[in-house]
Length: 182
Image (cartoon, rainbow, N blue to C red; front, side, top):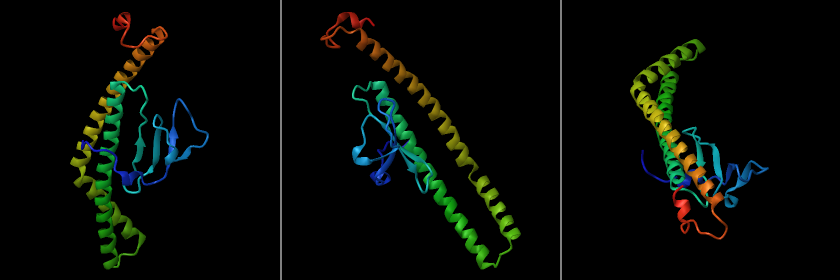
């Protein structure tokens, strides 16, 4: 994956739907200036890639495993967006060329248009078969890694919650020797 942050132009929209386990909103759409950093925000689908942008929230007490999961999920979403933007741009340009050719050749009957489009879809799918298979393979591997990272993040959160629960009031996390044994 390209290790890049979100492109600011993709967040130019001032509205995002929000989801938060800790503080659900009654209005699913909020102004970007009011976004809470610990909530996940999901944009509408991109016009070209059809991928929804996700801003993953960051907890104030985020564990290293949760941070790794958040960063990987962000990177995976960006990778999907880039791939489908490229594919959809290529598809659209080739389809427009076909439509222009049909218009120039005077093809107007629905039956002829349907046949031409069927042939176009078939040849486009076959010519991009390797690219689609490679994408699917990488996507599957990445989703397995996402599941693994999610399990690690859940485990680290559970351990942190137990340690925080059993810590006596007023004691810092690093001062108790008995907690280090946990």
